[in-house]
Structures are given as C-alpha cells and as structure tokens.
Image (cartoon, rainbow, N blue to C red; front, side):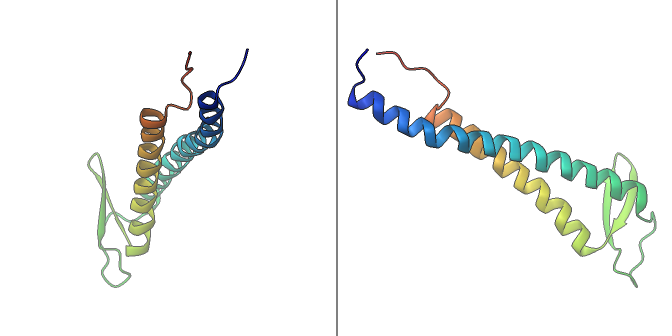
Length: 106
C-alpha cells in the first residue's frame, strides 16, 4: 500500500492530537474527582456556623448541608471545578474538530 501526501499529513496530525486529547480527557477526570473529594471533605470538616473573625463567611451548600469556607478554600474548590470543565471542553473540541481517533479510508 502506498501512502499519499495527505495520508502522511493526517498521520502526523493524529500523532499530535491523539495524545493531547487523551491528556485533556484524563486530566479532566482527575481534576473533577479531586474537586469532588475536596467538596465532600469541606462538607464534613468545616463549621456549620459562619465566623467572620476567622474569615469563614463563604457558604458551601451540599444538598441542604451548609458549611462555611474561607476565601482561599472557596477559590481552590471552584478553580478545580473550572479547570476540569475547561479540560473536558478541550478534549471534546479536539475530538469533534480534529477527529484524531477516526479512521479515514481513501
């Protein structure tokens, strides 16, 4: 079988996009599960009463269980959630637009 220039170009493109999509997808899963672990950890270990003297004024509502976080705790929690979402969108966009896992027949 003889490879055409287009087939060689697609192979090179796939070698770049496949690992990038895998990294983005796996990264999204890892960061998402980390954020959910952190959410549950905060829900079980943080006080249920706001304390302005310590900075615990940011409510975290887990299906009616409200605990109060400090600003850095809230920042890290929501940052992890955003990073997971962005990694997921990147993986989906690579799959939809670049299609590195699709076979192309000529």
